[in-house]
Image 1 (cartoon, rainbow, N blue to C red):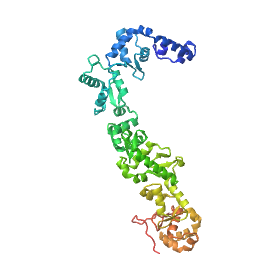
Image 2: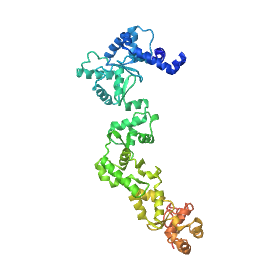
Image 3: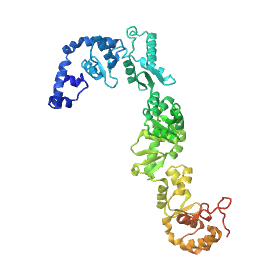
Image 4: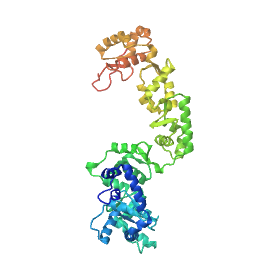
Length: 494
């Protein structure tokens, strides 16, 4: 049973497997194992393997206190004239009964002598790391690493150097385990970036390493160029793929338009960000708005933020996400949502429509703009170009004046007489001024509450935009009709 549990034959067997062989329960096997291991681990029993421990001590002493179990097996086969080659797991399991040694079970399995001078050296790791990082390829052959370590130890007159000059492969793995930036394979040590380039490891790790090595914000196109510089054409990554991975990384922070920064280099101005957080929370709940845009908030605090090395609205948003205040939701740049929104964000044009409905009657452009830019904190140009033209059911009454369709209660069939007249006019002239149409149907317009030509134009635009070209006020053209010079049609007089 012990041979099976230690893996001394073929492989390490589970409690369940041994229980089936011995026809007893797995719990009973566990109890027997615990009793037998307690006996085996007693000093008297361990001393019966004193010859093995003597060889093991000599090997580890001469190899910096760490040895891969495969290296050790080859030595033991020669020294002890073993006729069979034990598995790595079996030999490590046998050695594990002696508490003097530490076993690292992740491949390649290693045996460590914890009190060895080299195992406790705090200087060799940084020297080796610097040597690898300084390589243009980001990699260093193991034999070169051995030479660098030997030269360093001789220069420092290390007390162990005369006896322990034979560095082992296991010792390199031991150093790599302790240093996050270093990885090792059969014959080479690598930086994480070089490893990912060679083995196609986690792309996130690759991008994070690039940004960490840069120590500065990088635009995604820079990262794209860096990650592809040594890739064959058929394996080139697209800019879209690179940007998507940069966004997904928890270690890379959006720091500007298309620009990312590694979080290790970011210092958040806590007091200033807390002040801004409080301002945002007050605005959301005092003004009873579902969300606001961080772009406007950034403009309000721009000078202070720049003084504190927060260079953009994106960077400010990232700082807020880092703070992770439970009273707001920050997962939809550039918007900061109130908890009342339940994480659901209506498009800004719909929020502006709700405001216009609550306002009642005619609302001025200044009113809408102020709500959008002062309350919702959206950029004025974005409001003018993207949001205002897309507010549903919004009719323009006159210059700078708007009304919601529901406030004038007009249905599409109500303007049929006016549209019939428009068809008659435009059938002979191809285009007409809405002022002409309004004047000729003024009574019908007045009865429907259409008080201005501009409002009539907006109503036709809302109900019949598929039939007429209403791109530029006050022109009404047949849809698709263009002058021979490819300009929009002119306006008839009258």
